[in-house]
Image 1 (tube, rainbow, N blue to C red):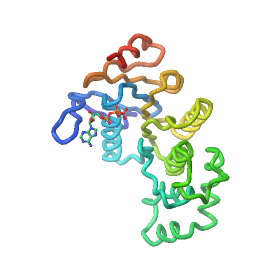
Image 2: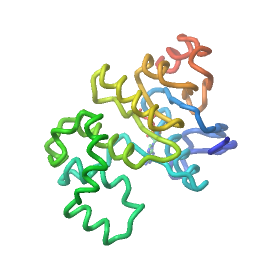
Image 3: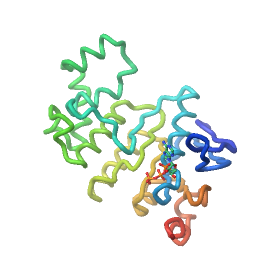
Image 4: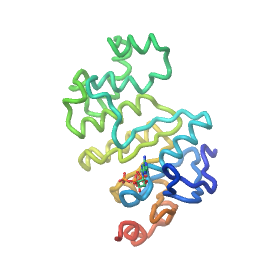
Length: 221
Ligand SMILES: Nc1ncnc2c1ncn2[C@@H]1O[C@H](COP(=O)(O)OP(=O)(O)OP(=O)(O)O)[C@@H](O)[C@H]1O
């Protein structure tokens, strides 16, 4: 089933085209991984797919590159924010002021899987970069949905953790679109690798059909 499609659209910012004439579809069950140099348009493309999915009425979990956490609030409260739009304003206020036992119990197993169990009540501003990144991921995984969109979601953790986190994302979300810079992780996780270079999609194919030289060419100066 096709969940979202970009059909010859020009993506950019304020009139400046970053990716002209993009043709790309996302079907249920696919794991797309975007590769490309800094500034090649990965975030731009993720945002466009996010908008398109939302417009189609799909529930999407988003893990942005800058995490978008509230630094003064705890790991638990930031995680619970993943479902704010499922509840009314009053319920949300109560949850954010004093998360109830039920909400805590709901989020705790996931925070355990992410290695955050000892940090649940710590304000995010007192965490390391990797711990913040895992909190942002916790919020997305707690949200759940048809599709996960994550922009460099494992850039701040070590390789072993990265593999475990990608496995967890795959377990929770059959469909995802990720930007990754680690080519080995990208190959291992993706069902489709998409290379961006010089304003266009240089390749879009299953990892086994993408030549290492094509990937190297993405990053060549
Ligand atoms: N809000 C914005 N306003 C104007 N230009 C932008 C904005 N965001 C990104 N750009 C420009 O769009 C281009 C693509 O940026 P984008 O963030 O999509 O790249 P990226 O591949 O995700 O990069 P990185 O790997 O560094 O995160 C860049 O030239 C960037 O300068």
